[in-house]
Length: 210
Image (tube, rainbow, N blue to C red; front, top):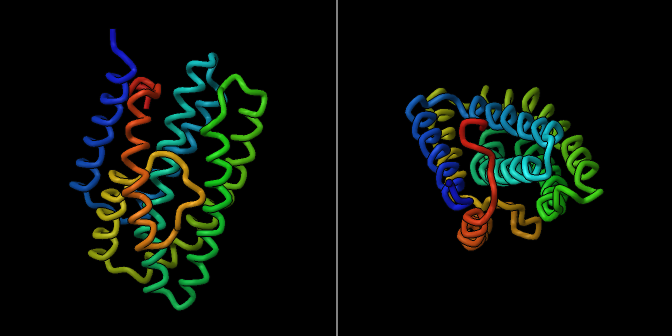
């Protein structure tokens, strides 16, 4: 019978293989970010549709795992590129960081709730409302402008860096951590091993369902 630990390693191996296939394909960075967004939306939907506490808990962990890593990846790779490449890039990046901070604080609350708690669904719904607004602005405005300022090669290189950063990022929300390099790099390296250890004892969805 598979153990929780076995489930985690299957989960991790699946995403390692996915990383390899994505980097081999070498798409544009906006495509990788949008793909993450669609996965996060799917995990949110699965939380609400889950019919048992155990199933809700597994999708809660999956949602947290993906959103935490995605946020750090953007802060390490995408927002510095905005600041460097765009005339109003610092303003855009700072706005995105502020929105991330709010979501991180909500995610921190959510990740520490039990699926049986009365606050569980209201918390994830409030989080996702704010996250959806951020995603919409990012996809329809910020990423569009950024891609216009990038060559194909630059965008592909950023895509690879974004995916790589997620492999080593914390898998839980740490809202008190810095959100700008190089301090975020250090904070992430310190937090990630503890998060990954916690993942070993956490339940995740069956890999075939992810």
